[in-house]
Image (cartoon, rainbow, N blue to C red; front, side, top):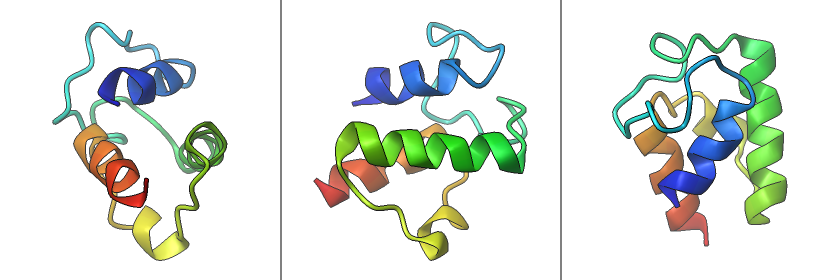
Length: 74
């Protein structure tokens, strides 16, 4: 699951998926802005056939948070 999420994130950041770790923060470590963050949410929803509600988006800070949320929704 981590590799799939990292592959999607790689398209929005200059950090390669090989450099990513679960504890990396989406904004601070990957440099994502709000526009790219929401584009990623849409990509993840499509890729994993889930819905990530706005209240969950506000609590997801790291790659680990994303992976755990997706795993819990599947």
